[in-house]
Amino acid sequence: MDNDRFDLYDRNAETSRVSAFTPRIRFVNYRGLAGMELPVWGRRRLIDYELILSLRGEFEYLVHDSGERVIQHPKMAGEVLTIRPGELHTYRLLGDPERAFFSCIHLDFEGAAGVPEPPVRCTAFSVREDGYAVHELFRRADQLFHRPGRFAQEQLSCVGKLIWLYLLEEARSGEQSERLSAMLAYLDENLLRHPTRSDLARSFRLTPQRINAIFKRELGVSPGEYVHRELAERGYALLHDEQLSVKEAADRLGFESPFYFSRVFRKVFGFSPAMVRRGGGAGSL
Image (cartoon, rainbow, N blue to C red; front, side, top):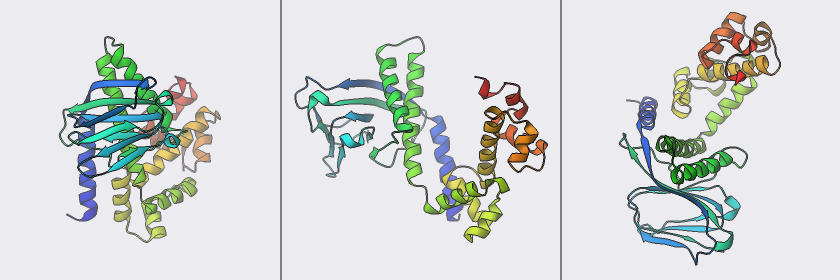
């Protein structure tokens, strides 16, 4: 099996494991540390995973067996630390407890062996995007854990899985190759010409098969699927925000006919562009 086919197989296997796992939340807190004298947790080994979100304050994570040391710094508020089961470690606050605030979630998994883990200890999220989303998910997990309702456990499991997937996605985006980034920039610049994998192959001096393998391995879609998704999303904005007709949107996006535009749009969104014009689809919510 060549490297591209092996990488694709491995990525598909990981996707299957991600789809199958169900996290079980054992404990959640979301709190300030005011009143605690030099908060220290350890030396200890956990039987489950612990995710720690630092919001205010400087914290240290020390793995005693390896000597690994990670600092969660107040300038990087929004970092999530992943502590794995079985590691002998100490976690402690380095600064003033009166100003410190953090959240932790203890979880394990049912339904899947070999659950993918974030490959980095500390994951920093964008302040403008994922950082706020993850912050709110930790807060919501705390509410569900301490104020249970009829479906609280099911909701809590979904929140835990979503946090884990954010971590995985952020880690994977950090692994995105410079070559793929250049290819995506090329597609964006030439999107209205509907570039193909053959165009990419000529521009980047690779075979079409190699181009396809790179996209499948790093994004999980083919170049054609990526281009169609981008065009459909732009089409949705033209229909919904600018109130263009289906024909006008198709012309603006370089489609040879409204019929072909509609076929691509339906494949991406699951409904026709005409529904957006009539006030249906996701835009009506």
